[in-house]
Image 1 (cartoon, rainbow, N blue to C red):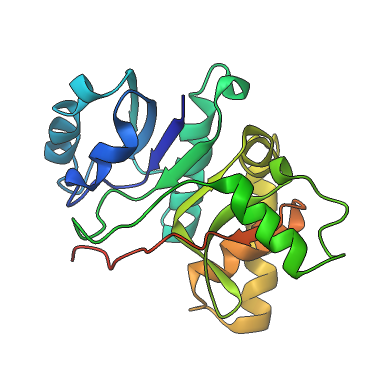
Image 2: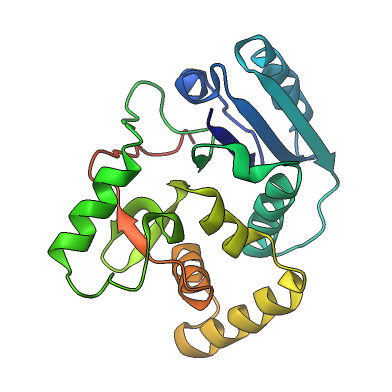
Length: 210
């Protein structure tokens, strides 16, 4: 079974979620404002396709979008009672354009490709240490990525996460300015927690529905 993680606002949620959630456990953290309640109601209609659907709704905690989204992801992961029971986990945004998302989930194959093509750079890592997603230039597309339980624990089960988020944000603002892309933060977050990013060679992520 696969663990599915959905975080942040659910605006424009659509049938792209069906292949991911069917017969899997789904863990959702989202917000109770900004017209999000009707999208939570829509998500409830998909409950019948899941093995189990857990939803936690809070009022927004941060004004900064980046903090809010990472906090929501950490909160969604915290809802998982036994993370190690899953074959792997997938974290994604539910508002990707329907019908254009391509995902296979062959994580072991992606690790092998990365290991061979970059030898010996991954010699100190196992497939369980990494996450798998799309990279554009040097940054991760944080809208959809996969990983084994170990990598998700390293990234999202952190006691002092608020301190570490603010420290990294301050560091990146000094280097890139106030309006740096969130993908830079997610990429650096992975690096700081010693989680290599492996290219998912089958993944095609479409644009968000605006």
